[in-house]
Amino acid sequence: MGNQKKVRYKVFLGGLAFCGVMSFGYTQSEASTYFPIRHYHTYTPRSWRGTYRTSAGDTLKVKAYSVSQNGKIFYKRGWHGWRKLAFAKVDSSHYTFNAFAKYGYQSSRRWHLKYNDFGKKELVNSVGMGYSVVWHRYTPKPPKPQNYDLDYKSAPASLKDCVGKTVFTGPLANTDYPTELYKSLDDMIYDNNGQSVVKITDSGVPMVLIKVGSYSGSHYANVSYQGNSYFVLVGDPNFSTEEVEPYNTSYADGVVSSPFKPTDKADILVKNNQWINTKYQWDYTNLNTEETYSYTFNLKKDKWE
Image 1 (cartoon, rainbow, N blue to C red):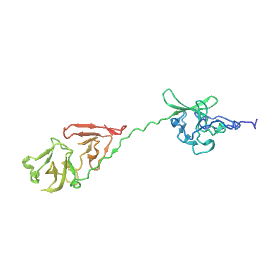
Image 2: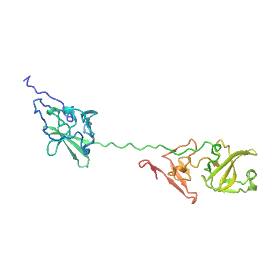
Image 3: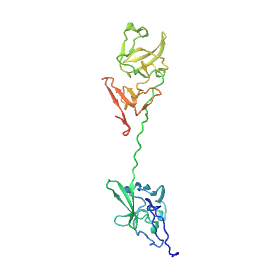
Image 4: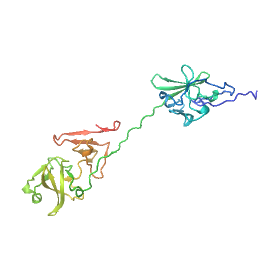
């Protein structure tokens, strides 16, 4: 019996060990042409491609020009012999991945594609003796979207960097604390007997900065607003000013305030060194109607709504 003992081989896709990947024994005396086929393809069908898993956790990857199991490639288009990817039909409903196999132990055996009761794809590998291995199509769950900073244009750091450019009334401007514009420097310093020339009650109102300077110990900005020249008291033009700012959009306490919608990227200037994150609420105030609309960022759709 010693010389007649059958040699056992481990068969791919049916074989490394039990617990989901099986081993079967075959002798080298089996027929020299395992599947007598006439036609084959050196690529896999599009409908078969994807990642599959067994209940034991083994992974099968069927790509256009290769087939691998648990990270190891077994059949590939450019290889030769029984390791060459040669996809062929072997009977009325079954196929093989390597039609050039000459012996049973070399062959990937019979395969067919089916859908389970839940409409999910499965590849069923008939490995012999009435035994089959079912490979379930694996679709990884997409990673949960993460909040991130959005790319908006940053404003200059100070008013001095904005001469000749557009500046805006500060975020504190409202009916109780308007931005006050004066016709002259004297009017600004002496408050024109308590009467300002123009009171702007909205933040983010644009005007062109002509120059910045100091007068009688106070800092001022000379601006052009609606075609006229005005003066406005500001803090140190090298730092935050509150009355007139280089930016029109700011963030505080989880809320972004802007006279623009978050989709109006070309018009938005964010405060220097400040970032807008997708987890913030965006409050847009229409300067014409003074109505405020709130936007939140939809991470799944990757847009403001």
